[in-house]
Image (cartoon, rainbow, N blue to C red; front, side, top):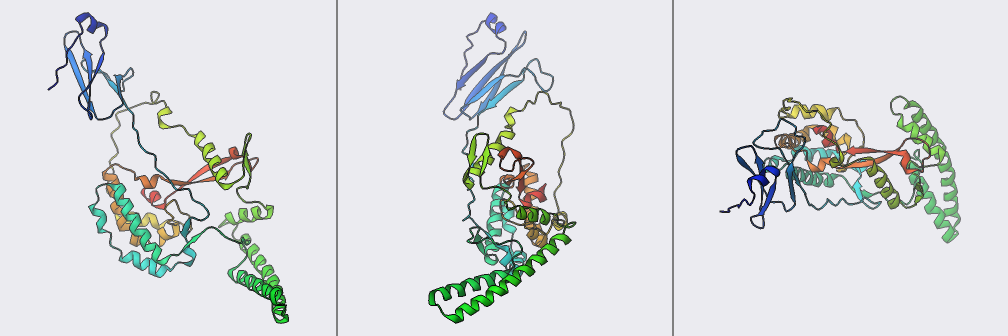
Length: 377
């Protein structure tokens, strides 16, 4: 039992009506005693905390009318935590190659998957981690991995058969140069003529597809214009004021610095100007699998994916297999009033706005979140 001695006289108490006394009880608990004084009675408000750094003061602008016996206290606690380390993607970072996936086996495995283990988790973040671990293990069985590092970059109208012909032509050319055999040279000449004809036919077919997709898929028009201009979407050399960025890593960090300067941390906003009312809180009901299936059915058939690499078309096709585990996770998030941390992460894509394409300030950030997070929203 701890006894607090009051060294103040009546005049001192009247002079300092809201004095605070900080006492250290032990290594894990602080006791904050705030004196809220009236004309006749001395009141003590106790605040217990296990944080080392805590500041308590009387709030000058309380949200509601203040009780004369208990003044409104403003408590500031400093949270010290280790920031999450996010791996920086490189050209050698493996990704799913859904173009060569065995979708029949994949969807059969998803339909046969057992997700009852998610019910045993109390924390929604732990449940989501377990869901992703099991989901990625099923995907890796049917979807090969590849790195974005490529030795050759072909135009968009090159078909797989044309690329195979070009590689075969290169093979016979090397054979002819090394052996000087006429047979290899004749085959090289034949393939060279064949490739020229194929390139012309593939280019015409590509132009026809672009013209026909003006209304349905206007992105193809912009890809074609960028290709004709001879530039990529992000130039290889960029600058900001007097700084220049030439490597991909420098360009990405430059974008990160520019985009981070746009936003202010939440502590910088002034909440005193906001108006408050007694509007009742919103009650969220549990979601059903039918609701999730209906939302997933509206997803476009595209390869758009967030940080978890789960594309939009897979959400659409596997909606009946994924609705059950997603309903468990989303209902846990609603019950715990928690938005899962993994669904807060997003891929930031710079999009050019106007003027010089090499100036970092002429871009705006677009956040591509997980498709599962879109379902939750």
